Image 1: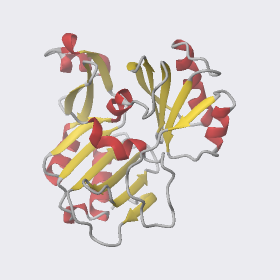
Image 2: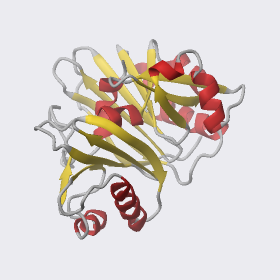
Image 3: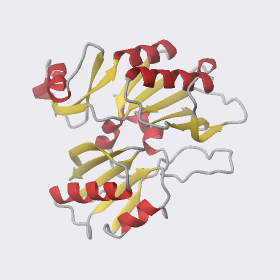
Image 4: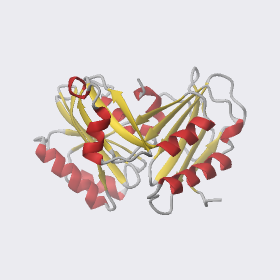
Length: 281
């Protein structure tokens, strides 16, 4: 069995009653599972596993999924709804009027594809179509485990993001995952840009924020960057960004009942994981 490294692992002490929802976030660098009760928003389980190294092949990813599925005993839990979100760089976008029946062809032109790919499309609220790939063997594995599983890409959540308070006319959202950085730009409450970048150092994150901001004429002294990710408000990454951006605001995944654990997580941790179910249309 694969060795699992838990960054965080919480399970409610007592069984919880109600409709049980599983959000399952997967990337080549990490996997996270979040189970909550739909009507009460009580947290039944939150588990985060970081991989020792990037999983480059679908067979390696599937082997890791098998280990996680077994170790967390997910087969014993009667889920009422399951949402699987992917974070990777194999995607493209186009207006719905342009895509029509050409989504697979467009994806293959941009990313390349093989007979082992399952190409998925998701129409967003602005009539853009987000097209992404998933290894067919991985999809079949998840569909064998979970009844009525639904898929999405974390980019859809970043694109659909809107601040709870009245948003500024121009702002950036930066979502920091292990190994990946998602950036979306929003103007007049409408998405205008999204991309996903690989990163290794804090300086990489800063570079991409400054570079994308410059392309879209965001002024670091004036415009807000909304941040999401599993790093604290006094972490070295935050402190570095604060030296260049005057207005940083963490995005909270609020609304859930507090977990019964001494290690209470900041509200902005696991923003994508906790909100996956909201961006599956």
